[in-house]
Image 1 (cartoon, rainbow, N blue to C red):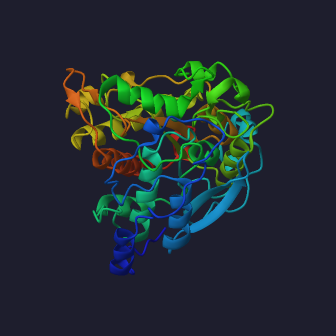
Image 2 (image 1 turned 60 degrees about the vertical axis):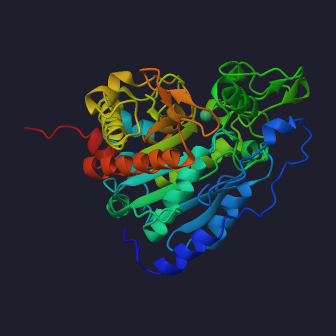
Image 3 (image 1 turned 45 degrees about the vertical axis):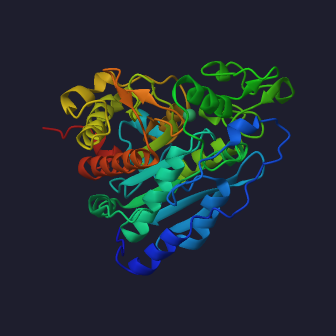
Length: 409
Ligand SMILES: [Zn+2]
């Protein structure tokens, strides 16, 4: 894929910097749900690079895409468009079998088709609508792919160069626009300690009828919850009440899930990043989670974890700067059966949940010293993560090589 990163750079960059999209109306301000006014307070100085709402994202994709292609891949339960931005040319043709059939046959190329060795990178944000960091990350990644610079004006030459070594890039900035629209703010206030955590969790996991926090993992006990029995359903579910990270994948699937699975069928990606917010407060840094997926991909996951966490540690975005500590894959939390599993078993991609700290509250490092995250450090971690993940894909060649049969002697 070729990116004309210098074309129109000055013009585009000026446009990016001047336009914060702040004047655009927000949906759901007068929603049927009661959100305490205190929880809707926003900082007075939201940075221009913090593009996080459904409306801001739609405006950005409409106005700022010159090289990529924007398409609607489906509609949410609430009727909102789900958009993807693509770069490069897609895989051509079809394989001769289903993914399952290709595994039974013993060669995944039977599913992936003639250009099985092409590399396809996919990333999606806001599967949970109250998690803004990865939306900002994907919008700034798109800015880098378009201009070589993020929305702060910072150049990312390694990221731009690596993206050019990948055949196809598919980005979904807001996978759950219903959930995101339910939280009618651009940015939370930063609150210290337990207060900040509580406000973030209230907005994201919702509140019971009496106003008390639903919380995590209790938010998963009722899918879908009875909306009449909650004060506020939070950003987790779509308008049908379903948390698509834990959809009924083999049964009645939600339109958001179906849109993502159909996109996966069409693109047959190698790697899918499922980007969330929510890390332990005593190790308050970006963390890659180990998916419940094909055992044949375990070694590839270990190498991916090591690559991404090494990049984050060396950039000062982990508890220490020591990759020997931070990048050991035995430290990866294990996910249960979820959307990552469904996408993996649907198309063979290694699909990985990655959690970010939140801009709304603080935590500590593992020595229990304060680990204050700022919008800038959060964006930095998102872009370092994409850079390392793309380099990993470009260097290792993707699914067809990860599980290739050894050549016969
Ligand atoms: Zn989440």
